[in-house]
Amino acid sequence: MTGSSEDDSFFNIPPNPSVPLGDNLPVLTRSDSSIGNWSPYLRDLHILSFSFLFTFLAYSALQNLESSIHEDDGLGSTSVGVLYLSLTFSSLGAPLFVVWLGTKRALLVGLSGYWVFTAANLYPTWTTMIPASLFLGFTASILWCAEGTYLTCAAKRHAISCNISEETAIGTFNGEFWSLFASNQVVGNLVSLGLLYYGKGSSGSGDSSSGTTLLVIVFLGSMAVGTTLAFFLTPQYSSYSTISEDSLPLTPAGNRDLAKRMFALLHEKKMVMLIGILIYTGLQQAFIWGDFTKDIITPAFGVAWVGGVMAIYGASDAISSVVAGRFSTGVPAIAAITCVGAIAQGFALTLLCFKQQFGGGGIDLLLLSGLAIAWGVGDATFNTQISALLGIFYPDDTEAAFAQWKIWQSAATSAAFFASPRTDFFIKLYVLLAVLVLSMVALLFVIMRQNGSGARR
Image 1: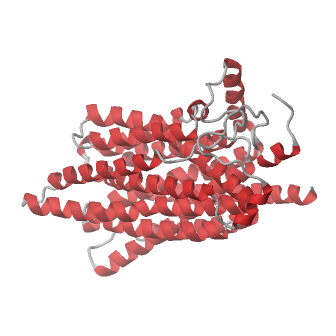
Image 2: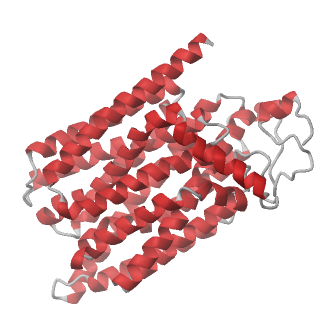
Image 3: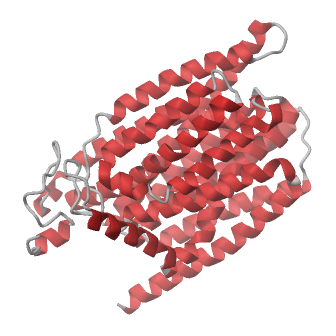
């Protein structure tokens, strides 16, 4: 490698001029700030966001229904548990695949597992759902590691192009991405609500199997749109700056160095303190996807209304993501916004401790909708602010940092789904409240120390 210049360091661009920048990837200079708030990287942000929207409006709605429509011997809950267990272990090696493939190709590979899992729901048996869940866990680990890396890289280059702070750009990019991502809950669940009612009506016997089949077919079409959009993404550099989308695979020595950098985060003090909040994000997602839909919504209003209530949750999540992203201007703002989300979910959990039985009346439906809104606010703040925080704390180890998030998050989600059939609902609520409080204390401690060290410098 040749020596790096001051400009190379500023732009975080590989100092070796022989490394290609990839197709249509512009070289930015400080003078590019004259273009105002627009940059080519906004195009990639929009494409990535809509690609995930079309893909996950299918998958998320289907996942919400797994524990309700596949109740035989716990097939639905078990398949989701296997999925997240596979995701946990696969995330250990996900950064290697992202660097080997490049972020764009890694995103395309990651999307393939969602096709397989959705198609398996056309013939849901133990021999189709479990292998599909294992494969999706593997590809999802690559997808989410690549997404975090791609989004952070694009946001940083946008900041350079528009002459704005990295923290502001990262917050804005995460706000838009997670807003559109959360919108999948609105669209997908409204589609599932309509089609399940249609299937029930057409069967004439209350059997919604025909509606479920039609639902899966429609969802596969939506995934086709999402995958097609991903092909139009511009290749981006990973945070391992010697690797580009068009470069050859790493050498064995490079592989070992990358693995060391990833596992080194397991002992890094800030990451150790963040583990609690990473675990909580997995537990709270498992609760809303599984326990809330199966134990609260379905007994009161029926399985078809799972889509309706979860659509409200998704709308709250989407709107809150935009707001959180706009106000996420640095580490202190991240702390304040995350506290708002923690209070919202803490309120919902406390209310559920006192009221767990809901009738089918309008008042109870409004109350359930309010709980869904509060949970959406919390989920939005956790997703946007943790994504921004990892991008700020670990600018040179982005793949490894996001892989750590998926390891702890998916491990918690998997454990929650496996334990769900054998755990009392009260115990689940108390565990969630305890983890929420302890993890927020640790998070705020890390942020205060970070601000203190920054002020001393």
